[in-house]
Length: 330
Figure 1 (cartoon, rainbow, N blue to C red):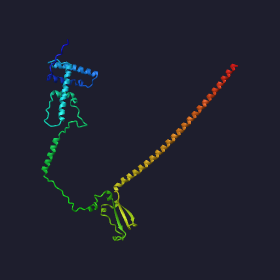
Figure 2 (cartoon, helix red, strand yellow):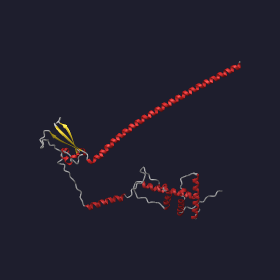
Figure 3 (cartoon, rainbow, N blue to C red):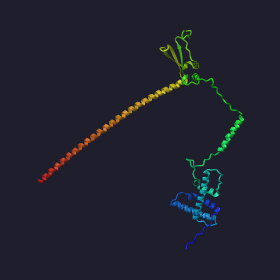
Figure 4 (cartoon, rainbow, N blue to C red):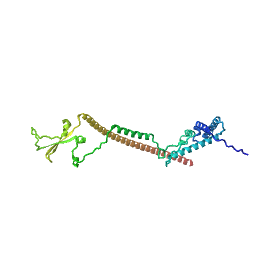
């Protein structure tokens, strides 16, 4: 008749804390995710050591390794359930009073052992996470307070600016802009013209040239004259004055021009050398091909000649053997 196993006493709070402390000691082996033969043997050996240490500390009731293992699994299951319920309550909607936290020392120690197994990973790619922005409320309050302090210290009142558009007309768009607002291309070119029949004549009997006021800021050495004969159309001679580059910039421009021309010459020389190199390579390949064809042809001719000579010698030998055989028959 088999003996009935008696039920052991429940684990006390002290025994549970001792069990978790010992599990934390052997957590690297007990919480290993491998399930092969060697890993299972190591886990069983760890629980054997854990049972010996547990019974030496807690002498209230003897606990076998199997009992300690099942108790630890039960603690893990209950701790994960409590944590998942709290997290689901945080994600819920509907308002109401906040739920009181039911975490104990056992659960905090269990969380240290399990880590992400109990808390889970935060989702990075969707909205299934709890968003917390640290310091948002304090920053907003500080910014609003600073604005109030500035307003009280300065004592300035807002000014309303009213623009008067009563004298505006669309013809104002045709007015010539100032020299500062004009682009550089228009500042560097201006026309100076005179009429053959002009009455503005100097003491030497030559017509005087009227120059635009914008030319007063330029020097004579910076202006290049270009005479355009427009007498066929209007009977006037038009002198177009173009601002030259500054003298201090000319050496740099000359160097750039020389460099560009030398670069162009170098590129042309490189292209010519590449063409010559390509032509020489083609000629070399053709000569090699021609020589190889001649050599193969010569070798084939010699081979055929040797085969013909060999065939002739074999025929002569057969004739001699045939004659000798006929002589023997006679």
